[in-house]
Each structure stands twice: as C-alpha cells, then as structure tokens.
Image 1: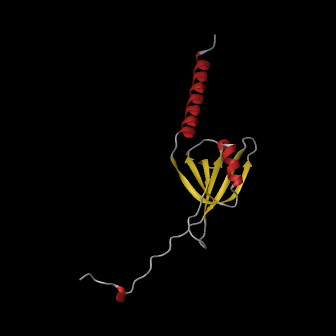
Image 2: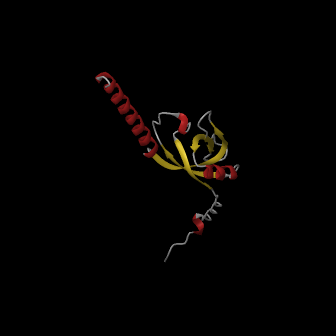
Length: 141
C-alpha cells in the first residue's frame, strides 16, 4: 500500500500534466488574431532538429523603393507549403492565424501559422480623369 506522501506527489504530477496539456491545447486551438499579409517570399525552408516545420519570411512592400517590412511565419500543412514553393518569386497573399504563448518551439518558430496562400494579381491602375480648366467649365443658363 503506497504511503500518503506518494499519493499526493502522484496526484500533483497528474494535475500538473493535465494543466500543461490543457494550456497547450488552448494555445494551439484558440486564435489570438487572424488575417492576411501580402508580399514576396524571401525565405522558405523546412527546419528543426526533432520537430520539422516549414518556416518562412515574406517582404511586405507598400510601394516601389520603400523599405520592406518582414513577416516571419510557420506552415504546418505540406500542401500549403508546396503552393508557396510553386509561387516563389510572385507576390502572394498569406492567410494566417496567430497563436500566442505556445510553450515550445516544436510547433513552429513563430506565432503566425499560415493556412492558405494565393497569388496576388495586380490590377492595372485606373487612368486619371481628364482635367478641366476653368475656361472650359460651362454654367447652366
């Protein structure tokens, strides 16, 4: 028959494991935020010693000549990773979900998990409206 101290220690360990498991489940299933980012993929590779994940970086450029912002992201789905690889060199839109406070980097090196990608098709800019000088304005009579 185990002593009372061993039972308390065992119950405490079980409780701690349940709390850690609950925390991990919560951080992986509850989105802190979700959105889209557009840019050009600069880096994308499968990384990790034990837990291999797709890690990437896009350069978000607002206008030509501007200094780009970087957006680091993680991809779990191999199909999404393959699409990103196929769209290399093109402007893409990444759909992501942000998960905060994940206790280990085994699920990814960033807190932004990409779950969709599409090519961004730039539409030609609309031609500016013709300017009218003051002499060309007609007033109704």
